[in-house]
Image (cartoon, rainbow, N blue to C red):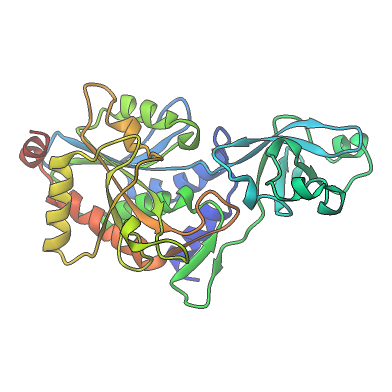
Length: 357
């Protein structure tokens, strides 16, 4: 496995739902520290590597996010079944019978999400999706005492059970937590690409915490870094699966990274977005525009911080977002890295001023 795939596997196999990002943060630190002049953190746990400009005062913030969606243990019943609450957005139809990692202080336990079987449901009940409140996790114990002895307690995090996998076409990569360890991969690769470059601006590249529960780390990160421009790096919707029509939006795996025009959290800063398009076209880097009425990324937190930070989200299309499994295309990630690297090289203090105004 090459260095990039090793990085991808290390980040996606790591466990870290919102608020529990410490293991993922440690992986990020190991990769960004050797290629950074300085490590920057905030008090919630976001982490960045900084490369200082040779000539320039302006700062560009590049941010993925460390957290993945998952669950938290809320209760253990008398028979040892675990009740849980979602952390981040889950669709209940993708959850039943899925294997889970219940992460305790003593180690990781395997569980499965269960509910009342269809044989015990009325015909009307069978037609309706099972509500999350009626699901439970079975870790294979006889009672509550055994569950406690195994180390489970309220507040433990739960993540999907899924290993990083190359698929039939090796460019298609399957993993949990591509949302948004993909952005973490890009943030690391950009810093590595910039090693030895004379930069016209300061670059702060890394990842936030708690994006999935309200863009919380984006706010604290931007307040800490005080950037002049910001790029959030996150996954977007893939429109290339059955039932998805091309007129719904661009987002085909393998056709390049997404430049997001707008979502529910941010209208991509027009001056910055036009500059990004120009850089992509001048360097022959494929890209796709995407506009979605819902959802949001850390650009929604970055752009309203301090006195305002012109922000754009750059991402890659992802299949099966917010589920136990997701698929992206490796070349989309590579082209996102190329695009952001060239954006950095294109910037100096005067260019940043022109973009803002």
